[in-house]
Image (tube, rainbow, N blue to C red; front, side, top):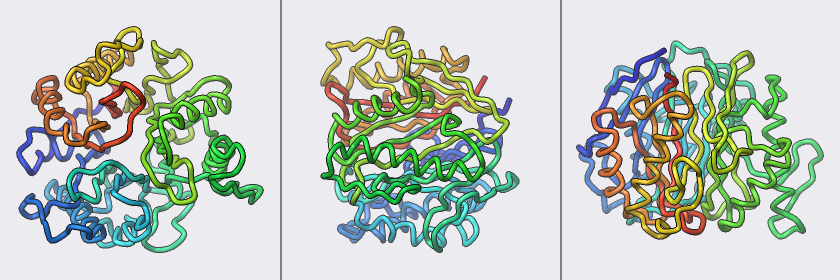
Length: 389
């Protein structure tokens, strides 16, 4: 198995990595748009200038890779958390400047609106692969400056974040105010992913991680889980997060993720709190961790009512849940590579990072933080990737 290598530390001296390598896999911490990449100071000239902030976020990602002796075209997948979605195409239009003419056409995007700190317009979290890993674009970008739809690279398939407004096979359109719109758009989401996967060919059950952002509220997260179980024979066989993340144009759901390539095995470890839902998925040399809430018992998965609305208590509890989940998957916290943190209170970020450093010590993963309207009683939710033992 590969060894975890910390290639670069956080530029602001916060004590966690900015870039981690595990074999060919590269993980980068969150990159904020409102800070100048050269000084890491807040740039107040960028208030209400989201595209200029995109340049900052993406240039920092490229700069990190270059400082480690690599190039921007190593990027494979970027999660964009933004203050608005109306400029989503404009943000991807600057990708060629930072990820290269060829590289940006081989990269995948997923994005949603989130709670942002102060005047920050974008936080970008990226994963990548070293360039010695061949890329095969299965479903290409519609045009320059946009994301590819499905890319095969190494052990995995990387899928674009799709909406469910239109069914790709029938052409049926489902407006957000149509009867039973959520269930119908949910079906269309998966049909769109199916249309991509058919080109491999590979089944939807090969997904190891799916990220779902919703237009409306926490009820959508529960509806997503129910509808997804119905599609997959009563179970959710992949790691996932399901978060209300605001405006999504004509879509109720934004759905994208990572699947195993043909011939690569996956092993699902089921949640103790819901044995019909994946807690972690081992695939290739990685373990994908599903969303873990800070108000749950690490062993039983039961809600701990005393922790509801206690963000400090939930920070520590979520990390305990993470440690327990990794143990059940046969790995441990020292092999944690990337940690995505979703907070009801985005201004709790620095305090959470200090709690995480106390737990991880010198083996901290890269960390990216976004604000979200979490389900009732949840203040902290974690998602991530670890190395298999």
